[in-house]
Image (cartoon, rainbow, N blue to C red; front, top):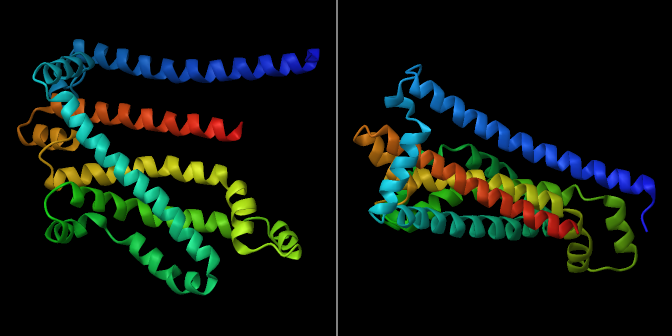
Amino acid sequence: MYSLEHKKYLKKIKLTNFLIRFTQISIILIFVFLWQFLADNNLINTFISSSPKSIINTIINLYKDGSLFHHIWITFYEVLISFLIATVGGIVIATFLWRYKFISKVIDPYLTILNSLPKVSLGPIIIIIAGAGTKSIVIMALFISIIITIINVHQAFINTDKNKIRLLQSFKAKPYQIYFKLILPSNYNNLINVCKVNIGLIFIGVIMGEFLVSKAGVGYLIMYGSQVFNLNLVMTGIIILAIMASLMYYLIVFIEKRLNK
């Protein structure tokens, strides 16, 4: 049985969570209604900003011609592949750098330099090497996200409590035991945060890649809409991207809650 104080504490947490969700949803609804109100009363230029009704109609038209889910699937596939490679690959490389400190110190400045390069400028080179297709898009997304992943994860690993590491070493723990028993468990939250950051970076990389080479996908819709001055299509693509990113974010949040439990 819970004590009265504990019940009050749990009730307060539930109320706080409810208020957070309510506020988040309210902000979105207020923004949408205000946007539509301004559009209906010609207070904004709907040719440039579109409107919620126009976006809904565009989504319906894309659904009717059978292209909506095709474009969404193409982008989702590219995002998922890039996300998995960048996250897993970044953690593996960061682990290698944590284990071998000499190599870590040698390549540290190179990581910073590579991270500072304008990735868009590498687009033509990537296209020439990998071809104008999904490979180029995935590589573009990896260039943008994997270096950040390596830097952040490696920094989290080396900042793990040194006293705990020494304690395990005093018991003759091997490096792989320290890694799996201390380093990884101590950095679950950091790894989750890296995943959250990666979502945004991966979407940026994929859309940039689709701008350059894709013949399908949400990025293609945005580029095509801008070329034919169909701003409704452009805004529709942006809204679809926001929804996709939100779904991936809440999937990461769900995984985070399961790990915390």
